[in-house]
Structures are given as structure tokens and as C-alpha cells.
Image (cartoon, rainbow over all chains, first blue to last red):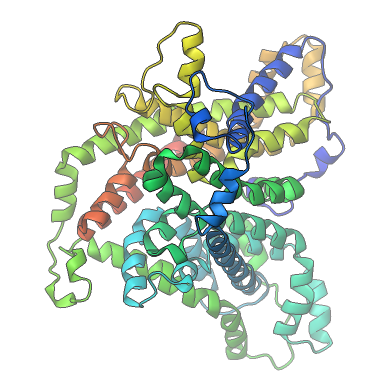
Length: 293
Length: 310
């Protein structure tokens, strides 16, 4: 299980040989296959982006067109004028930000306790938390819904946020990383009389930048894209998140308005795409480090 | 891994002057408490409630009236297992896993090996491009895929019709719907596996390939003789992760087909969700635990299969 060791993003053996093997003669066909693959994977997104500037009439025309004949911004204007898209955007952002902050703080605190402190029940606590990673989401779905309904939190931000504030994955990630911080550093602070909370907030957390970056990106993304829970818990237009709004339009009154759906989808993807391109190193390192998305 | 845990866990805190065991416990739990409270309320608790519920006749109408709930033993499990739609869902899920996992892994591995061949400058472009579907909301993906796979105005069938082929109803024909969904899932997830495989490939020393090349091994022989055996732990890991994800497959069918046509894309997770929306909470919980057992069994089987090969 070497996959689980910390800092495996770029193993030392590799750093020297980054760039991989030389390009051999006669490998043009690999290049060709990769480009075809890239077109197949990115093509649909490009079509969506171009489609968001078309009219529904043009989108339904046979044969389909690639380049918009009469480019229009009407779809985007409709999203914000006729529909409450700014509200959905706000809800998605608030929920994702709160869930991310909760995971970063609570998972780091537990990660610190699990690696740098000794207290009774530590081993079993970690085993139980890790064990829940194998439990399918559908198991807790129904009890969570009953719980949130009985707490009167249906159709509130709290109902969308609370169940996801503390995830097992974050503990796994932060524990790996904090475990790699040398004990000598912390002992030196202890000798100077620093308390554990001071050490955690002032010494450990500032050292956890890369792990926090990874956890932030992955948690924010997961929450931003999460769909089933908000669909069930958010029952009124004022509480919808972006994916819920689009899913409901796609099956509701706007079903036939594909151009509007495409523009809405672009709005959902755009922030993710920007963050991803800027921070893709953290994405891929996090995955290489832990094997989870 | 246990060895590591021990090494990291035990003996790390420095002995403090005057630090007593109860003080250590207090400090330790003060760090653990916020997570543990949330975890108990929103994770461990619900799992236990689901387990208990799977042996009761709980329905949506009973949730504010616990006295109306009765224990009915394994009746939910029997009812669910005997339901034709459950059996159909189990068969569909099995096909999805048995075809989808190898398909996604082969595509992900091919992409990783290809990208690793030495296009250093273009590697970022490929990585972002191949990974884009992984980070995209399933809802947005569904919007565009429904249009791609549409029977009459779909992009794929429109392209086929240029060459004179009459494309089928990819999502509306029960003979094709599940395969279309499998293809879409592979399309969506192969970038994720590519990143895992790329990390694994980078740990293989380049000298090995150079030595093999000097000995006259061709590309395929080098792949079979060096890449596959050295990548075995990563392959196992990827198979387990993908398997766990695919056994629960839900989102794709929920947004694309709602399980139709004629239940040809109904999955176990979607079956459980339907029981939930019908208010049959006992059936929901029983189905969810059947799914849990399936995941545990699959994970175990994959570990066995990979080990026995070596």
C-alpha cells in the first residue's frame, strides 16, 4: 500500500526523469490516438459552449451546426433576468464554501490528534472513521433525510451544509500529511511552553498548505457538483443550487429550451474549469497522494 | 499499512513534565470532539439507523410516530430480493461493473501510457482535457449527452446519417440504453484513472525500458513485461476504487434515463432511491445494505484475483 504514503505526488526517482521516455521514431500513431481521444473528450464541451450562443431553433436543426449562425447572448440574459440564476449561484457558493471550511478545520484537528497526540480510543476512532469510506452513500441517505426533516432544516442552508461538514476522506488526507511533520519541531515548541492548540493553529496548520489546498479543491468541487441531496432537501426556488436548477429545468417547463440549458451548464462548469486549470497540480497531486477524487 | 499507522501514532508526543494521562485525554479529545460529534450525528448514527430500519416496516408516514414501527425480521430483504425489478437492477449493475470497470481501466491505462510517451510540453493539455469530464457536474454532462445521443436530432446520429447509416435510439431503445450509459461512464471517468496510472508509471525507472529496448524488446513486450507487472499495485487500487464507484452507479442513469426504457438501465442504487421516494423506508434500507455487502464482496474478490495471479 505504498500508494498511501504522504508526499507521493512526485516521487524522488521520478523528479529526475520528468518528461518521461524520449519520443521514439514511429510513435506518431500514439500521438494521433491521443489527439482523437482528446477530441472525443473535449468535443462535447466545445459543442455545449458554442451551442449556448445559438437559438434553440438552430440547435434543433438537421444537420446540426458547429459554429453559431447568428451568435446571441440572449440565453445568458434569460438565465439572469427570467430565472433566479444569481440566487442559485449564491446558494451553490455558500454551501460549498461552508462545507469546505468545515472539512478543512475539523478534519485537520482530528488529523493532528490522531498523529501527534495520544489519547484513549484513538486507534478505534480512526478505524471506525476509515471504515465508513466503504459504506455506500445510499445507506445514510434515507436516515439523513428523516433526521434533517425532523430538525426542521428542510429547505435551509443548514440542511444542505450540516451533513457534509466532516468527511472521512478529509481525515484520511490530513492525517497522512500531518503525520509527515517532524515531531522535533513540535517538541521544541512544547519545551518553550506552547500549548497544543497554539502549536496546531500557529505551527501545524501553516505547514499544511499543500494538503489544505488539495482538500479545499476536492471538497469544494464535490459540494459544487453534488446533486441528489440538494435536489431532495431544497424544495423551493429560493434554495436551489445550480445543478438542482438545471436538473429541474431539464425535466420541467424549460425542457424544450435546450439553448438555455446549455448556457446554464456553461455557467456551472465555468468556475470549476477556471479553478481546475489554475490549480490542476493540486488536483492531480491529491489524487496521486490518496487515490480519491 | 498497519505498520505505518503504528509508527506514526505511537510514541510521537513528547513526554511532558507534569503531563498526566487524563490531561492528555482531555487535550486529545478536545481536538477530536468537533469532528466526532458531527460524525456521530450525520454518519455513524444514520448508518446504525439504516441497519435497524432494514428490519422494520418503517414507512414515510411513520417517521414522527415511532410507536407505529414494528420489527419484521428479514422480511424487507426477502421482499426486495424477490422483486423482479430488483433482480433486473442487480443484473444491470453486474453488467455495468463487469463491462464498465475493465473498459474504463483499459482506456485510462492507454491514455496514461500514451501521455507518458514523452509529449512533455503537451502533457498538461492532455491532462486537463482528459480530466475535464471528471470535474464537471453530471447535470451539465447529461444536458450535452442527451443531445449527442438523441435519436433524430442527436449529433451522433446526424453524423451517421451523412454516411447513410440509420442510427438507433441510443437511449430510447432498451437494447442500447445500458451500453450507451456504460460508454458515457467510461468517457466520464477515464481521466481520473489516467491520473492515477500516470502517477504509477512515473515510479517505474526509465533504465528498465532502455535495457529492454537494447535487448530488442518491442513496445508491446516492454508493456507486458515491465509496465503491467510493476503497475500491479496501482492497477489493483484503481480496480477497487472504480469497482466501488460503479457498484453504486446512480447519477448517470438518474439524469439520463431514470432507469428506463423498460427498466433496462435500472441500477441497484436507483432502485433503493425509488423505494425511498415511494416511502418504503424499510425496503430502501434493505437494498442499501445488499449494496454494501456487494461492495465488500467485490473488493475482497478483486484483492484475491490480483493476488492469485502473482
